[in-house]
Length: 69
Length: 407
Picture 1 (cartoon, one colour):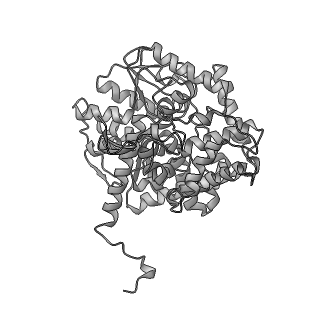
Picture 2: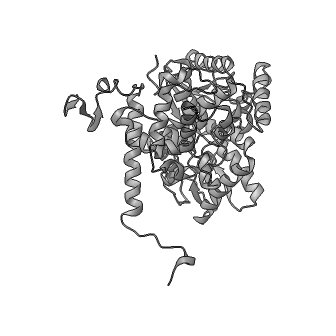
Picture 3: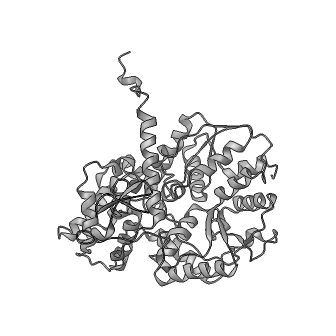
């Protein structure tokens, strides 16, 4: 299921992930459910898409009081 | 051990006035080390007060200062009341979004704030102006224990059973203060031919107050979970976002047990019924409507599509949508607390946050603001009256019932 990039990092479901077993020396691992992990992934993608939609194709006009037109 | 929630074992340790666990300090460092401060930009409280001390960034830095001996927990106590627990900061924060899945480390701001407040209470700290909230909480607890809360009155004439595969679960707030909406929900479900039952003696859910109540909170949670198990429910439908968060996140955390049933938010359930053709909204409703995303649904639970689906299925409605990510920046001002702790402690601030949201809706030139949360409904109705703004506050189920010819 996991495709290892090296012994620490693998790709699972198309997403990079650090092998938790290799992390414990430095940072205590919390219990994170798959559901929560997907929630984070979904929200990140949603936010990036939103940023793109908001700012990639249009330039916001300045408020009237700052306009020189 | 439950697999239903994400948690940090070190959050179960007791704190002292001048000590927090090193693991918490490490968590706080990851926010302290950040210079983006996106959490600040998206926070409805910070947007209104402009006070750095009211941002998620600041809460983490405050705790770090306690961990490093620069201050004491009780000195910073009242700062921790300036949080609506809307969940915007933890969605917007790169610590959550950009490392959460990669390193499996995430800061849940709501959990941290709840924990900090509980520790402060256990240390004997009294939040400034909290007497009203404590009175409110005590009254609900006393009335519940004395069996004085009429939690099943709303369904008296509906002949709903107490068992079944589908159970509609509500706690005291909706059952006593939003009865009209609740009855509409039940009527809509009946119209679709859903066989469902109810729990006739639910205990208060108290989403983020469960910890404050200690043993009593655990007893209430246990009672609700056991009662739901006894009904034989496979699916529990919830019409209150705060109750939804309790059943899906807080109960598993508190009881360390996964509920043996699916918890479904009522709009998800009803949108499915509309998709399947079991409900056909046909009567036109002539209104220009926008929708307010409840924080507990949109930010904390990731449910934002189904209410829009329902609104779009109603003929005659001119629906002017503001996307759900833009609404990460909003809150009604009531906060996540079921006993209105934020509103009680910061009445004016809560009003200003709600007013800002209503004005933003009016900018879209709509006549109506639709919502699906009873707590947002309560807050906006109050803000509307105080501010005299000309906007109609309405629940999605009122619009749906009109279109289905149910009222």
